[in-house]
Image (cartoon, rainbow, N blue to C red; front, side, top):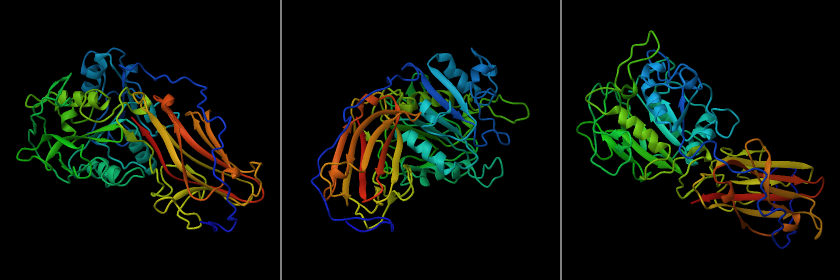
Length: 484
């Protein structure tokens, strides 16, 4: 549709036949895909950047951060590391199959920090007490969608340990319902606003479930000492599953421990922080040893769930976030892939993601409109994505419409490059270059294989460059990166 998105747009009906004009369409590699760790090493990040030590909470594996090995490189008992989660951390460390770190600053995905989520398979959120920022929620949800494991541990409603007006129930529900990736009940459950004083919730009977029957033991019961439960909504996500239930409850209500999947990733929820408290920690904190409670099997539940989230087991989900996983679940990895959520998830030049009627979207109302000004302009559109190493198919596709005021049939004055970059911004490959010579009516789908990037976090980038006169508009819609 011709018209003007902004006053500088100059569109015409001069349209030429649409042909594929590709330079470097074959993937050209400048780096070798190598996982950050051996396949048997599960990389787990414990969050300590959201008041997890406020009040009597001591939800850390060690006071040495980010690396607990700096406190003791070969721990044999829970007291070798200092923290109420030290038993959890030491138990994983002693297997020789886990690499553990603690994040103390904002959570990111696709960045250069050593605690960036792209470097890990699992993220543990042990009763966060401050809200995640918009950027953090995008990072967490994208991490899970691309194959990461997310362990959310709540506490009872009103457990506002730092008196900022937010408790873990509100914070975790906000993560699931107020993010730029998917706010439509992505995991298939919501956390109940309850304060259940005590109880020993029982595990369901399922001998095939890897969380209940895993390498760390068999789960029979857990512990509630002022906690909450979740309401399951399988109509929103059929993968959601209650594993441990409050006494008298079953089905979709009263789930004290639940699992689910999202994209290629796995999710676990626990309704209380008391079961992970090992009773040891920093001086001055009042702690309770729920980890070793003889009426429950909390250690087996925490450890089996960590293993499952990191990619072990066969019951759904993908695991292996950060592109380093060895499993692959068929899924579509790009967030806001049809641009209908507006200017979210993607990084784009001002005005690129738009619902302007001057150029019609292929579907819905929004699309990405690069260039079209008739003046010297460079517009960009990009998104970081991790491709699990277990995926043998990774098909990038998008629909492209090109129209132009240029009249030449031989000179490419205005161009759109489609490229793959690494996390440092180095171009790994130019998949295609389109130009004013590709102008035509309607949209045409373009497809490329990114299978050779399995195991890597890459950035997909569109760059439109327009000359000083006569506009060319490059309009992109309905993107996808399907893996299997």
